[in-house]
Every structure is written in structure tokens, then in C-alpha cells.
Image 1 (cartoon, helix red, strand yellow):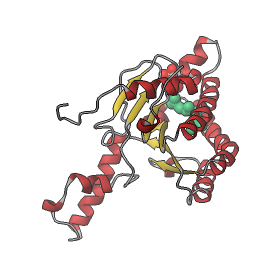
Image 2: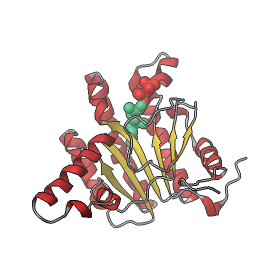
Image 3: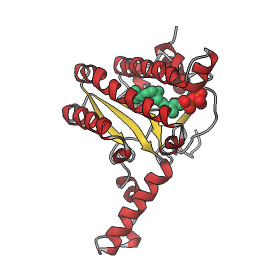
Image 4: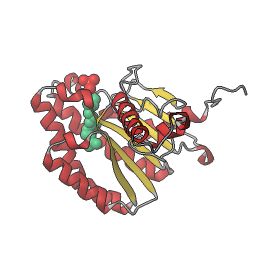
Length: 239
Ligand code: FPP
């Protein structure tokens, strides 16, 4: 049984949900079945986060690189996302969770954008929990977009180059004012960040599990948080 210290629950958990394809392959099923099972893990993890009071959850649902996957897989993922938003919105309401997106959401098909905007608008007043979906998201693109926005302010005479601080960059990211992730979980054993939250993960504790995302359930989340609670975060200092 996992013993968690309620006083040291990470405020923000970010997850790279990896291994859907392998999960399906292991069962001789098409890849989309792995994504469908993965959507079930999203539901369960979201519920578990509310239960133990993780305030912010950021999920890497579709990277800017994922567009190169075979067309049927991409459209299957888009349909799944739309269905998730339709089926899951009552859970967000019940738990007073606000949904937001980071990434180039404008790249998504119109029907998905419509569903997303509906749920984003309907949940905009909630403050108890926050769910961020990274969609058509790339960490380098996010930083590049921030640099461009800052350069435009310099060009317009609104900002002096000498006044550009770390906070200036942070304020121009997709979700300014959000605490950086304390814990980043990656499933399926790969030891990579894969262009996820490159700026925000600077001091995050990293936890990699061999569990494939469709098998990841509440006990796996609790185990990751327990491991996090045994870490000593030093932020470059000594302790
Ligand atoms: C990585 O597994 C997973 C994805 C690219 C998509 C993640 C999507 C979901 C979990 C389902 C839908 C999401 C929501 C928010 C409802 P992979 O396909 O790269 O697996 P592999 O490395 O084993 O091939």
C-alpha cells in the first residue's frame, strides 16, 4: 500500500503518455486500440489527481511531430480526443476542473477545435483543478514563439533588451503564471523528454516507469508520487 504525505503532494504533475502502440502490438491489435485504452488511463489519472489534490495536470496528448504518423492513426486520435471531450466534460464540471490547451490548437480539425473551445469556455471559471492538454505541442516551438513575441515588443519600443529576464520569457509561454511541473512522469521506459515543456521542466523530478500508458492506473500514479516524496529537491544548492 502506498503511503503518501498529504503535505508533500506535487502541485503540478506532467505526463508523457507513451506506449499505446506497443500495448496494442503486444495484443495483436491495431494501434488505435492502444490509444483508446490510453484514453481510459487519462480518465482514471484525472480522477486520482482530484482525489489526492494534485492541482495541475499537464498531459502530452499530441506533439507537433505526431502529424507525420499515418493518416488513419492521426484521424483516429482526433476522433478519440473529440469523444473524450464530449464524454468527459461532466467529470470536469463535477470536479470543478478548468481545461486549457497548450500548443498550436489552430492546427487541429475544426470539429475538435469546436469541442475543445466549448469545454474550455464552460470550465473557464473553475479554480479547484487545472487540466492542460498539450496538443500540436512542441517545446522548442513554444520557446521560439515566446522569443518572437518578445522581439516584436522590442521592435515596437515597448521593451528594452536589457529588461529581458527569465520571467519575461516565462510570461510569454503558452500558459503564463502556471507553476512549473514538480514531477514529470514518462511511461513505457523511454529516458527522453521528447520536446515536452523544455523551459518548464528545468527543476522537475523525472520518473520513468516501464508500465505502458494503457496499463497506467491510480496505483501507478501513487507509486510515482511516493518516489517523488523520497527525492530531495535542491535547485542547484546543497542540502
Ligand atoms: C504515445 O504512444 C501516445 C500518443 C502519441 C498519444 C496519446 C494519446 C492518448 C493517451 C489518447 C487520447 C488522449 C486524450 C487526452 C483523450 P505511442 O503511440 O507513441 O506508443 P508506442 O511508442 O508504443 O508506439
